[in-house]
Image (cartoon, rainbow, N blue to C red):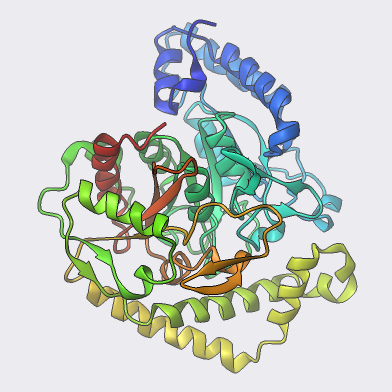
Length: 460
């Protein structure tokens, strides 16, 4: 095969397939061979859908041979976090308990939409149990190490989704984000990860963790891939009661509009504290590329993070309460202990956290009356070691697992759209910078990312 699909992004692959440079079947076979050869060390995949992938690729090739348009992602291999339903597979959500469930009857809505665009599903990806974690170290299915350094974590809970893109096993994946589970692994693995506005994309057919906080979104190595996938995934869905009825707004046609006139600022105070010099350097590098000198304060971000903890633990524990009572030994110990703690949180705390959420949402809305885009670190540090329990942040020794979401939780708490964009530093390990906007401004975020991609060469 002369066309090197592993060096191309998803849009480039689809173009090559449609123009006849390569067949979708050839790409699918090579992709599956790469996964088979490398997954034993990378541990990204928990299931590989080889037979259906070949059949889907053949359908793409047949459509092209008939002169039909096969879709904007024709022949593009993709994979999804193992909490999205895949027809014929049991949806694990990283758990031992779910392995006893029957196979899914239907694909999740997001999976269906990507397939309808010609993309070829090759498998399901590893994650923290029930999406409760920032490291993808799973006692049932093993850890997914960082492709840049296998002694370090890939981040989580969508670690398999980020690592498989970073390792070039697939160009496009889907993950979920409650408190940072798309953005944290995107940062630590050096890829793009988009958490859209809450309710912008359908979660139907995806196992929820915290219903009032959960989002789904794509990972990719280029901005145009993120924009293309997001455009495909948009649209109302009666199967998801929180999915917006707002008409889709296509982002891909707007990518080249630039940033002239946009008011961009760097988040100060909370988002400038508790980060390593590398994380602050990444933000400074992005700010310089965009000619940004202004700073802005997001008030009470530390309280937002605390309230997010309460809501997450309470809603998560409620979803799994029956199994916590009857079979606690079958949970990953770290997940179980946090769920048990969540089950003990007084109802008054949960109610107060939700009241604060409304207040905080209004304060941040006021911030966006003065700025259009806010920049902030995605993670406070580069990827920690797989066995590392603590790290030093702001001169204080803290636990690794909860604090990787230090800068992501206050933003997903009120459903803001955020893209984690990878930044190349002098170190061998990548870091991400969050590009943040008011709700339903994904197109604006991606315009900024496109400028950065051109200025800094973010896509690898």
